[in-house]
Every structure is written in structure tokens, then in C-alpha cells.
Image 1 (tube, rainbow, N blue to C red):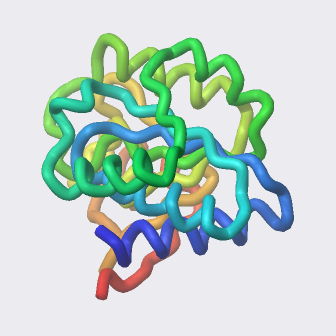
Image 2 (image 1 turned 135 degrees about the vertical axis):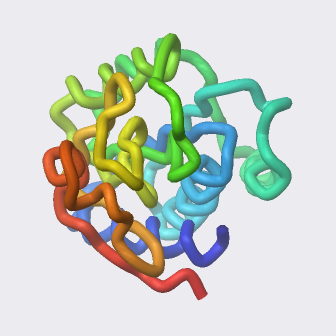
Length: 179
């Protein structure tokens, strides 16, 4: 998770090209954990980072929970409401760390609404591992999916990146090692 998150931060810095404001939208799984690690690295690089956690803190998996706690000890504010999504227009880049490769069912409810708001923001989006809502194997959109400018993925491109809706949602694909 540390290596993946650091790679995400490095790619985000390239996309920012000197700009300062990043919004990282995290889920409660390992994809969200990658986003939390990236947030720490971006903060340490002097960037203004807004972190929005989609889901209940009590549902964070162990590794993401560790990174959440590190950020809390750093006194980083992590918000948990849709209200902050309205401020995306003030940012320079959005990092999508909501859902990962384990998604198998249609995106609904609160998460669906978040993805729609992010897509409508017209901000460049960097997707972590796979655009949230895209089936990594088939390339099918499961209800709604992020339309990323770039997708940073690890080890190899997922099969679904080149199938069905994959190309429309992944943008430029960046492959990084995980070690």
C-alpha cells in the first residue's frame, strides 16, 4: 500500500505541474488506503490536500485504518460528507481512490452520486488502480464509472482497460511496479 500510494502521489505531482490543490476521494477498502498514503506524501510535498472519505470509518480495512490514523495524528482533516464535493471546483486535481478491482456489482446510492459529481466537475481525475465503477476484467461500467484523465495501475494493465467501456474511462494508463 505504501509503494502504491507513493506512486499515486508522484503521478499526481506530475499532473499538477506546480499547482497546489488536490481532492482525494477515498473508499474504505484498500483502494482508499492507497489514496490515504498518497495524501500523506502530497501533504509532505507541500500540496493543499482535501480528503473525503466515502463510508464509515468503522468499516475501514486494517491497512487503510492504519493510514487513516497516521493522517489523524498529523492533524489532517478528513471529511465524510457530500457537502465538500461541491468545493471540487476550487481544486486542481481529483484522485479517485473509491473502489478497486474487487467490484462485482452495480454501483448504487451514495457512491453512485459521488462518482456523478466527480465526473461533472470537469476537473482532471487520476484513478487509482482502476476507475471506480469499471469492471477491471470485462471493461463494463457497473452502473456508473469515473471518467479518468489518467489511471495509475500496478504491475500490469487490467484486462478490462482495453475492452468495452474501458478505454473511455481509463484515459492514459500508467503502469507502475508495486515493489
